[in-house]
Image (cartoon, rainbow, N blue to C red; front, side):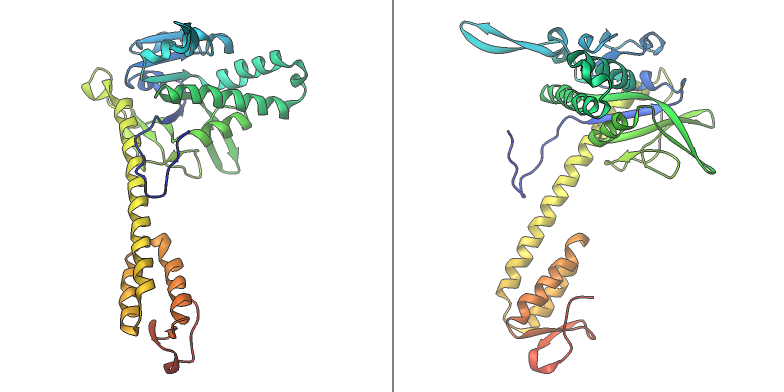
Length: 322
């Protein structure tokens, strides 16, 4: 169990990417340009990719995916129980093609196999599926594996708007999007393939790393050979950068609170307004309200008209920050 304090720096961690799009957009080929990939093929389509991954696992049921050969197992060596990793230890990235077959078909059937009553109890079946899926993802993360889930595109029409989303049943799709760091839609524009991560009115997306629309390089180029590996690196770097920014923002707030506790004069209070405006935007209003409350107890009031602090006897208009 890892415990993080508010000022701790977050290290790089494995990430989860969801890619979806129409047939022929090269989703599998792109995904397998990740670093040292293992492809879990549930869609019988690995041979259509332009290159073969390091390891291909062809699966027709959940037990073909979650087993000792793939995941690993505990063994006794010299009287001591030790973990013997499976094939995933040989790969840096696990690519699942497709997520729908794994979740809606294989995992659903496996849940019913564990408890036949779940065939009719959809709610409990999805609950068990969610737990088994999170267990699977947890094992991959513990192995420091990045994960790429591939989905087909599903179109839903609402009035004049056609919305694109990963093709999974409702609860499976919600689970997939919730755990993902990036969700990208692959399509063709002007005969070029492009990945769009930013969500819009007509497509589902997730863009933690704030990656702009990205053109997919042509097959056979050096840029294509590492395209997904490069995207994963950008996502990891962005997550760490956001964490660093949060740590700095918290440090700035802590320092400002220390200065607030030391304020004794009106001039010092007004100088602190500049400090408050220099905080991260999310902290500015809360800190100003804290200033107003604590300084009022020292007889220093906030004048809403001048937006300045004054001595109590010099104003009758005081209150919260606007």
